[in-house]
Amino acid sequence: YSAAIQLDPGQDNAWFGRGMAYGRMGLVDEGVADLSVYIQRHPDSSVAYTKRGVRNIWRNKLRDAERDLTRAIALDPNNAEAHDDLGVVHAKHGRLQTAARHFATTIKLDPSYQKAYHNLAIVFHVSGQQQNALEIIDAGLALDPNSRTSLMLKAAILSSLGREPEAKAIREHAEFLPEDNWTERSAVGGAIK
Image (cartoon, rainbow, N blue to C red; front, side, top):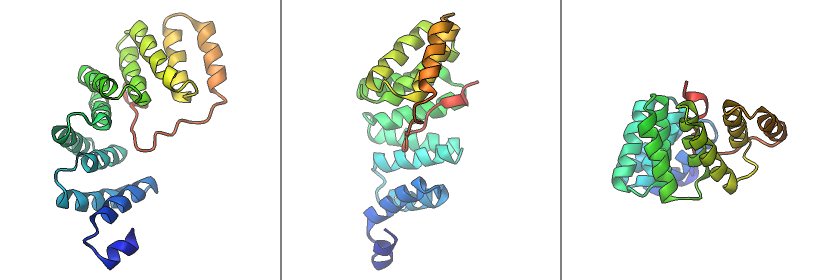
């Protein structure tokens, strides 16, 4: 991508591609800068705003992330990824009902988006809605039965329901699974206190 940009700085797709690559390499600031060049030239790209929003979450620049992801949804209300990641931003700010609405919208738009089930289950779990959390995490695990992170969440939910033997068995199974790889997606994770 750098060679393409050096040969012709007008290669917009190279700016986008390099921005994505930089982010994945851990050079997040550089990635945001390149995506910003692309957005300046393509202000109607919902995908570009989404990808820059994700990187702003990675940089913990939540105001910038919220602005980018809100813009992505304004450009394309059916952008499931942007809804999920905007839900993450709301969750990190403690706006759990708004976060839950975005996660539910993601699931409605793309029922195969496993991470949205995980995120919605976290919101239910921390809100004390354990039965709802269990139903949602089970729906997500139906899509990816070996999601280590979701299995660990299910174990926590089962513990909250007083079903410790089941929780222990799930934790022991999940312990040996590989970490989830949600490369372009941000999870609520431990963000909700």
